[in-house]
Amino acid sequence: MANESKAGVKLGFEQTLWATADKLRGHMDAAEYKHVALGLIFLKYISDAFGEKYDELAAQQAQGADPEDRDEYLAENIFWVPKEARWAYLQGHATQPNIGKLIDEAMVAIETDNPRLKGVLPKDYARPALDKRNLGGVVNLIAGIGLGDAESRSKDIIGRVYEYFLSQFASAEGKKGGQFYTPQSVVKLLVEMLSPWKGRVYDPCCGSGGMFVSSEKFVEAHGGKIGDVSVYGQESNSTTWRLAMMNLAIRGIEANLGKEPGDTFHRDLHPDLKADYIIANPPFNMSDWGGERLKEDKRWAYGLPPASNANFAWVQHFIHHLAPNGVAGFVLANGSLSSNSGGEGDIRRAIVEAKLVDCMVALPGQLFYSTQIPVCLWFLARNKRNGKGRVGQPLRDRSGEVLFIDARKLGRMADRTHRELAEGDLKQIADTYHAWRGDSADTYADIPSFCKAASLDEVRAAGFALTPGRYVGAELIEGDSEPFEDKMCRLSAELVRQFDEGAKLDKAIRANLAALGFIDLPKDA
Image: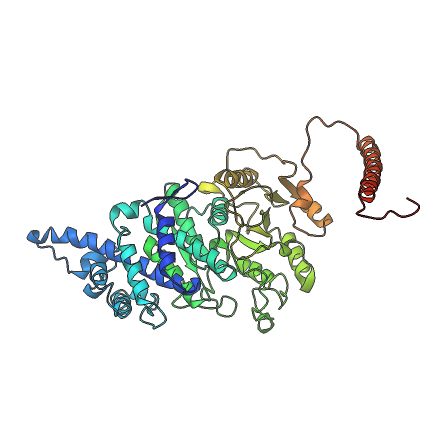
């Protein structure tokens, strides 16, 4: 499926599907419609995968195969789909007024036969507010795309559809949407820099699970396989938690997100976990996190975070869950780089002095659907002296340094309001980091206005502010050998001449307007 826009740009089937489905939702709010559409896409995916295996077994009935044997499907990690939940049955009733009730019953039946999905699937398609004609239209629309067959799975079609819909819902919902979706370019950058080859990956505010999906993609792209990393996560929002469970299920990713949603600060579902990689995008500047009830918490090893802002509660939660050689990469608002309010400056100083801060990256604006707040990436490492980098080789001792990268000039505008980091941008940033750490063959060198390996003494001299722009300096201009004092004298004289010329031009314009009778000149003019 493809389409041509008015500008002649070829659209992929994801955009075509979204555009058509979006028309069908009528006046339904994007936040509400999200679960309608994504639930149906999930149902179509597992029904297609089931159907392909069903046809295979049906063709082998003469050899004793039974297409209705549930164990045949479970043995190949395919969800068992009971008859009343199969897509052909639902599509056959798409135009009936009870289609919503049938879909709800299908979701219940699937959860009953697949305990992994218990409490995960949406089951409110029969509600009166949902237009059943539009609902039937979405069923018929999705029916036209193969999502669960082997060819589609190899091309990750369901993943592309899911990912695209999540991004479009985030855009449509604005601030609320951004709470469950992190832009792909940011996720890719975090994953490329952390390089989660093998081990435990943890995201305590996992949203729709995008960090885990990208981590698994990274492993597969570098010769590994799904299962080389163990996935642990947590999400407090119940609807978003269900999205994450569905998102991971369609990718075949086994994950421990807890048996139910939970607040990470007040009900840590993985209290004993020590993760090899932590990758996260916590809510920015969260003020209602209940910090006043956690004053004696053991996680605050570097200082009590202010009750008015959870930024440094998140940072210390990440540190608490890092393994001895673990690394963490996460997104925070730029205020975390230099704020001194509520003791944040003291906490930041303590973390720097503990030699935990590995790298700081300033990102360009307009990357997020949810906010225009400038953001940055923090990278922490438990063992900067004797840790291991890519494929296990020892790193250089960088314990007395912090790498600062200023990427604010990178990226391109994807549309009028959103910016994206291109593949070349991601490579430039990640390669710089890995060259500095010593886990690549490249040689690191400071680049004015882009990157600087600063000593801890330099960070101390800057009052423990971690703003990359303070360290990377200005870009060198080739061929400019004019001494600074001479240049300032020349430019100042030129500016004075321009002021004089401007005054003369202003006087001439006033005289012309007065001659035409539009203004009166002062008597002394």
